[in-house]
Image (tube, rainbow, N blue to C red; front, side, top):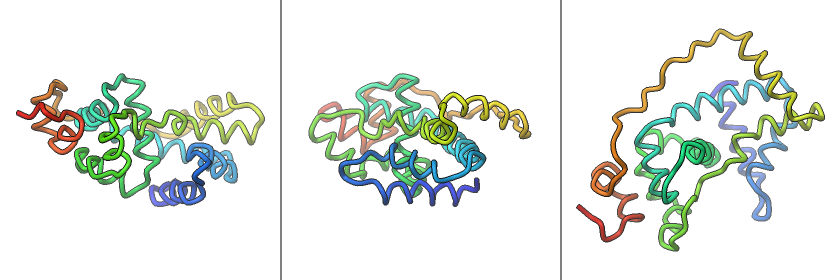
Length: 188
């Protein structure tokens, strides 16, 4: 699946999500209308975009927004950024501190809430959609293994950028706008 097609699919699901519904359920419904092969291609593109956000600066943003952030939570955060659509994804990829301008994050910070944009279920949308087509969600994992084996794939080591401590001083220096929202009164 080309990147443009991927983002069109995400946007279609976003535009169909109602106030009462959840994006991940709408995404599963949107994917279920596709073929099994298209679902596998979706997962391939999702993994590539998800992996591109595997960086220390993005993790630091998730750490601030989530009030801490484990490995698993960081996986969910990156899925949540993808769920926000192409424009937000590109902004975060270019500068994670731009999340300070996201209306949900600004509102959550003011209300003292954390874990905004952490969306675990988005990680499993392809498996859920595939399972709806086959009757068994585990069929996805078998098909995914075969799909990956049949495609030339060389996983390069991920460059996470410069490692740094997520202490207040570093956060204020590297993510000043998010730090101002989440670490008030601890300026450097």
